[in-house]
Length: 207
Image (tube, rainbow, N blue to C red):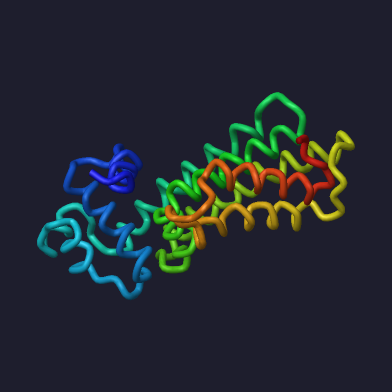
């Protein structure tokens, strides 16, 4: 089994039964390669080694598959960012930790992250509203760290909402360009971006 295949299996380990998990993994690959709208249920079923009819036993629609992927991805994103938001430590340490961890996830799981971050508008109204709520919560987690830094005098930030958006955008964009064949690995990119985020709030990273 390839490293990527093993990662996919571990990433979706909580999805059961096995056939449903195979469909989710196949959908992630198809949506990332072709985009949601250009992907058919036949494409997904074929990648999973199943018939199109078998897909509907587990998921009523293609949109339900996308929702499952988005829900799992956004829950994980929120857990990654809430931990440093609520942690004890200096605002600089917490912001660096948040960015480092968030970037690492977007690099290690760049295929899934592309679908999670860039196919939001393909969700139905009810599902989209739920995911947008989770995105607001991730924004609030990073904003809390930046606000704490401004209050303590550690950060020099004139526009907290704008800076929060910039930090999150920097992290999320990793999913768009990261390649397993690149010269920087997830940990290296995480360290680089943690330093960039600290500079954005007026802190010189420690060397």
